Image (cartoon, rainbow, N blue to C red; front, side, top):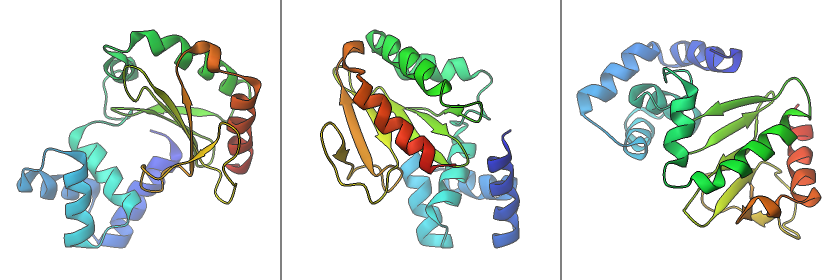
Length: 184
C-alpha cells in the first residue's frame, strides 16, 4: 500500500473515530453495491468528504489497486472490448514514467490514476470509440486540445480526448507533464 493511502486510512480513523474496516462493515450492512451510492450515503449520512467516501467505497467494493489480487486484472477489466486502446495506454505509460521516478500508476475499476504526491492525471478508456486523459491543472484556461472537465466531480480540471495512438502528440505529453510538475 502506498504511503498516501495509508495516511488517508489513518486520518479516517482519527477524524471519525472508526477504522476503515468498521466503515466497510457499515456500508456492507446497508447493502449498497454501486460506488456512487456508497459515496452519496457516506457524504449525506455521515458528513464524509469526497476523498474519504471514495476510499471507503473502493475498499468496500475491492475496486482499488490495493484490493485487487493483481493490478493486471483491473487493466484487463478496463480494456475488455476496448483492446484497441491498449497501445494508447502503453505509450502514455512509457511517456509518463519518463517524467520521474516518483510517478505511480494506481489502477481502479474504470481508469488508472496517475500520481506524484497527488493525482495529476487519469487514463480512461471511456467508450469503445473515445479515450480520455483527465488532467489536474486547476486555474489553467482550456486551450487547444485541453478542454474543461465538468464530469469527474473535481477529480480532474481538464480532459483531452483521443481516438487512437496517433493522437498522442507533443502537445498531449506537454499538458500531462505540466500537470505532473504541479503535483510535486
